[in-house]
Amino acid sequence: MRILIAEDETIIRLDLRAMLEKAGFDVCAEAKDGEEAVTLARTLEPDLALLDVKMPKLDGIDAARRILEERPIPIVMVTAYGEQELVSRAVEAGVFGYLVKPFRETDLLPAIATARARHDELAAVREEADSLSEALAARKAIERAKGLLMEREGLTEQDAFARLRKASQISGRPLKVVAEALIGTLDAP
Image: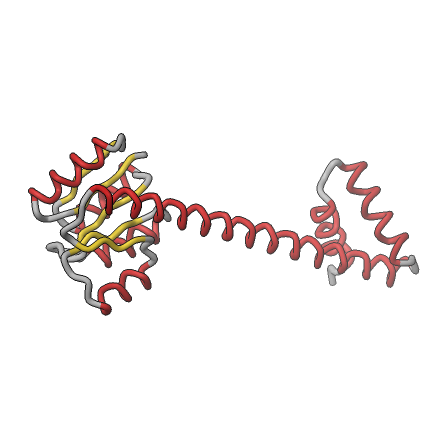
């Protein structure tokens, strides 16, 4: 897994890098401020980012927001500040973990694993939602096309569906595509 580190304190950044590399991760980039983190995330496309909350130019939470707008990846915030307001802002931005300094490798690795797992779960839910939306759109188009065939051709619902299915099989196109084409043809003014 390729990880981007954004931390303005050099010693902490080097410690993070050492911990991650010891654990077998590839640190693909290091940023000293939030703007650099956004640029590096865009160009290098890491699999995960560790961002300090308080950084120059752009704080870690706003950097996380920008990174996530372009490409959703798991992000863990690393900070010396555990204030509820910062935690709330981080959650609103869409980060997947929050780690308060000082921390050890035994804190960091579970935070990364948890962030990855939550990110993967969210990606699966989004994919399922997209799939369900597509299925619903297909069903609506098929129902509309059946209704038009029933109305215009005097067919039963079963016969209208059979006609759509046959047209789909003959043309080799999905039923939704055939239904949409029929709607476009029969609904034309």
